[in-house]
Image 1 (spheres, rainbow, N blue to C red):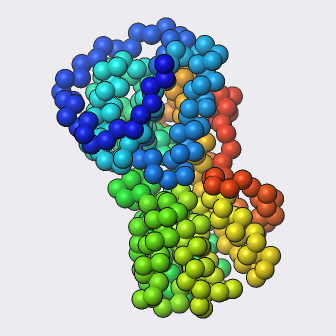
Image 2 (cartoon, rainbow, N blue to C red):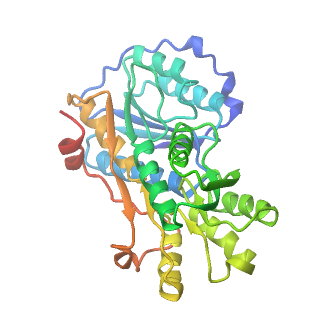
Amino acid sequence: MVFKRTFTAALAGVALAAVNAMPATAAEGDWVIALSNAYYGNTWRHQMVEAFEGAATEAKEDGLISDFIVMNGDGSVAAQNSAIAELILRGVDMIAVNAASETAVNGVIEQACEAGIIVVSFDSIASAPCNYQLNFDFKGYKMAQARAALDLIGGKGNIIQVRGVAGSAPDEAMFAAQNEVLKEYPDINVAAVVVGQATASVAQAAITNVLPSLPRIDAVLAQGGSDDVGIAQAFSQYGGEYAGNMPVIEGGGGTDFVKWWVEENKETGYQTVSMNTTPGIGGAVFWLGLAMLNGAEAPKEMIMPVATVNADNLESYSDLPSGRIISPSYSPEWVEENLVK
């Protein structure tokens, strides 16, 4: 029976010191692979979990694993520490960790490693020396996207920065990357910094709350997840000077945003750039963990590709499903070719 639930801070009473599981001894095909996902509150994370579950279900049906476990959290460190401690006690063989903090879950991850469990942190990584990291180049791609967006407004004007999931490694990396680029643009004024939690509704409310007190906004540097369409909706509903003259909003791969962009482009010639981390990483981290359990070797640090939409390929994205994030799926073959040795 697949074990799936949402953990909360109430589980923090699990005593981490009591974790003394024996090293994994399962035979090939008897593996139990787990996902500890610290935050489940946006489209990206939902789609990532779906990708993990899809890969795990396929592997279980094919007899490659005996079971899998998914634990989704509320964003707190205490809850994730407790959840990983529970997974150790349950004797799983591999844990994929989308971490609540780059450092605060390191202790329990070290305990998992000492118990013989393979740990791979991904997307929002942990820095425990024993764990493997399957990451995105957040700094590189966000610097490239910020430059592209700022160049579209001629390198001058007023902007808003929309931060992502508070406390997460991606938020810190992407915000730092944007700020590094802003040093190159002395004529850019940061009119406001808000928190969007990489979630459409949160980002929309945050933008709506600050717009009345701000000068004309020329661009918005965002973080993705599904914040892009929420930002666009906030400006559209505000209307006024933004009617038919929307700011350059960084896209984060949300299909609803790209569909809006396609229509806005037809009406006004609107242009921006969308770059996003791919939630299909949930499947990639599963196949990576399984390959490692079966003897494959992997480097400690691995980088995943991002998806890009711009003026050159926008038309090819005109027919997208609603409510999704643009992402390929990753097969075992892709993992073998690109991640493991």
